[in-house]
Image (cartoon, rainbow, N blue to C red; front, side, top):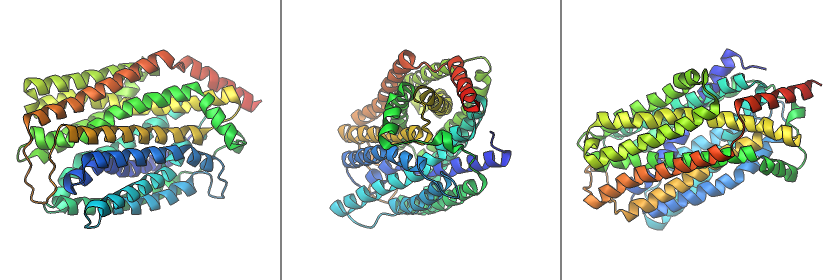
Length: 460
């Protein structure tokens, strides 16, 4: 079965809304609480890691709840709408912290951030679980994955590109006030986007194929699915690399590249990056797909991203990083690769659903796709933890005031920032390439063979 054009558009709008929210939290929470509110980077990183891993550990249980949900509105939509409304309120609170100091602010941050992760999970798992549940064909899944991931990239890009400038405008130079007002706007847009998605996307799942028996059997089936596990490990490594970069890049532009117009340079770089990511999803991946297998494209993208990071490091060490054009060209490789990688990991997870059913007889869309949010949160938790420790180790001094004066950093701090931003991502991506090359076996041919057999079994 296929999504209609209206449903596809609504599904894409939902992706834009939810990834605007995720991008604001994932990329700017460290900066907001460390650089603006003055908390220790190590403390913020530790809390983020603990909260995300704690929440990630609950994701499979959320997947089970979704899989066992039966209402007249369907399996996914009640969770999608309810989780959206709750998460929007918590996001607003997260960036509108009370005027507390020390222990009070730390306690507020820890509690609210845990709540943010839990409520985001409530809507994220059912959103992605729809893909393998609404169509049996590989081509349709790839198309819907491209639509979802491309629109998610648009939502991410909107936040990445415009946040710094929007905060400056909305807060009239006061970053704390600006972030609070931006969070309100994003929360409202988030709710509107998911309402459109929920009202338009009609569930057409086959209950018999989604049926599971016990929690024990579901987990047994999940961990027996070696291809889902390989995909999960690969996603962890890739996302660790990308989240380290996304958390550090604002510090690089503010304290290393610097200048009176650092916000403008940061915005331009992210605009190029966001456009490149979307270009990779919408144009480059479909073009390459006509001549290459998904596994070959995936390996190529990992190599492309590693090359991009090496070029950024070389530019920093040779003084070429002072040129925004040079940085944009180097970053182009990373962002293009990232766009295609996000599409392909979703495609591979969808294929692992078929693979798991073929091996065990149970179809676990919600449980396997709960692993997607699990690993993204675990990866981002590890990334922000390393980021926080790294910022304190290199001795970066933040701006915990509203004067707009940028603190000068030592030469050793700048060197450490450059190394953190490039070497750690390179190591993560290289490990992902090794794991994927040695363990992943869901080739295009094998995936089609499994899907054909399942359709034959179900029709029979």
